[in-house]
Amino acid sequence: MSKLEPFAESIFVTRPVLPKIEEVTEKLKDIWSIKWLTNNGPQHYMLERELEKYLKVPYLSLFNNGTIALIVACQSLRLQGDVITTPFTFAATPHVLSWNNINPIFCDIDEETMNIDAEKIESMITPRTSAILAVHVFGTPCDVKKIQQVADAYGLKVIYDAAHAFGVEIGDEGIGTFGDISMFSFHATKLYHTVEGGALVHGDKNLKQRIDLLKNFGIKNEDEVVMSGINGKLDEVRAAIGRIMLNYVEEEREKRRKLHEVYNEELGDVAGIKLMPKCGENVKLNYQYYVIRVDEKIFGKSRDYVYDELKKYNVHTRKYFHPLCSEFTCYRQLNSASVENLPVANVVGKQVLSLPMYGDLAADDVRKICRIIKEF
Image 1 (tube, rainbow, N blue to C red):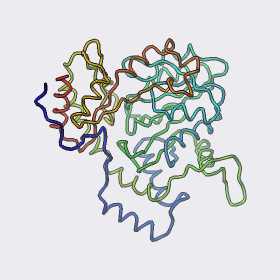
Image 2: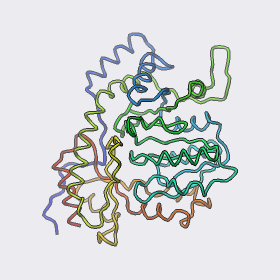
Image 3: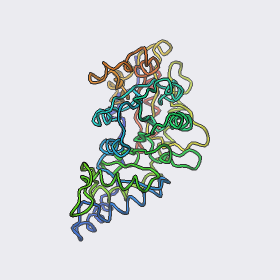
Image 4: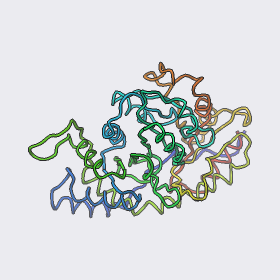
């Protein structure tokens, strides 16, 4: 069989970007000096302003994680009834709808981008529909123009799950400027992180006031609680780390861009391997993930075979997203979750494989991973 030896140490699908410990220590000294650990302290305030500038958005509200942020987004827009979304996403996307007593309605995905198919949304709208919850899958922008056209025609709200899309731009516009609200995840596995955290971005000052109340128990002041809220606040320690991490984003993005080029060069001519979708020249990507699709009929081996065999070489990939959300026990009874309604998603879900992608990964290691795959 192969003459290639397994990697001596595990190659994981991703590794967190870590700042210098000395930088964290200096920030901790600032926090310790004033003994303000949470509840919208100076680190929290400064990070919100810095992220607004970096992401090119008018208003940003920090959260302790992206899931809580997305739950609050639905509350802030007073959504109800049905919301059209994608089955090809992380579990949190439909779960936030369920937690708001909203029915997720699954729409099939586009074969190329793997995002929600904007051309199929309109056919799924009913009098119960209140919004569209779309996902910029793997950082590839949705068809934001078409989605907005459909939403405007039917008076629907638009929320974007931009967990994968930190720093992505269309033209000179930040990805968070589209729709009514976008959610970013700052989980440790992301290009940019606060260890654990998230944010909501939007263009409405009044909406920010409502969001900030909702994430702090609905407390307006010492004497007034004006709505039923939740605890979604980001603490000072993680906000401080987030401020440090902003200095690492562009360097990490560039490292990943170069690794994308290596993957493309090595796998671009392999029959049965479909690479990440190509975006227009006006799109600035973040290169957070590198995902391939394995067509078993052409490649000769299944995605699951590649996944299992790579483990033998100490390469840990991820079948991301598998299973589809529509296959979860809690959603499979929905009419919209049927295989007949989601033909493209059900094919893609069995093909997709996320390969190792992080800035400290050596280009030669990427080439070896690709050689292993080609031997299959």
